[in-house]
Length: 173
Image 1: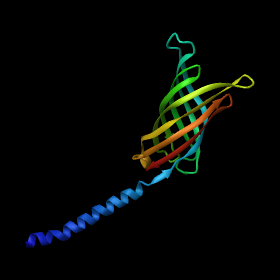
Image 2 (image 1 turned 120 degrees about the vertical axis):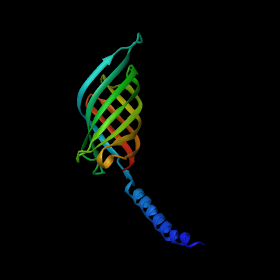
Image 3 (image 1 turned 90 degrees about the vertical axis):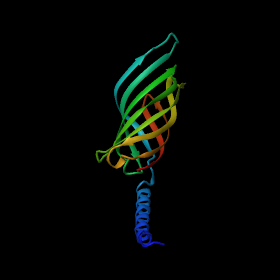
Image 4 (image 1 turned 90 degrees about the horizontal axis):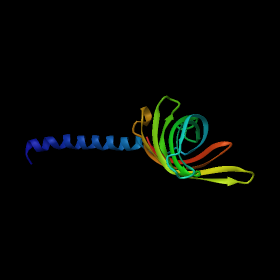
């Protein structure tokens, strides 16, 4: 082995060890965290409804609202979520999709996109209830949540008393 090759071995070993430790540190910083929680609608900001076809009961709805969230994860507990949703249904049954902005207490934001299905049924006493479920994924964020990855599922109901939703969520950030 030449003298120059022998001198480069310690540098190569040191560089490899440094890269390995940076990789391990990066993996530890991006651990999977449970961000599951419960949401309730707090305020509807806007709602537009149109009937796009001659089909009876066919509606397109575009709405913006604020939901409040509780979670065992302090990063997601007590936050508001700004929800931008679109609905396409016939007599209350159909598809929905949209995007949301989680407004974290430290000023950071995380963004989600979601889609699912819903069904409205009549209930005893002349009332109604809409049940819904779907999937969501994080699409980015700011600050602490700039590299957030993950997502989960949601299910819930809407009735004259309001909206409640249960989310199951795992995220790396």
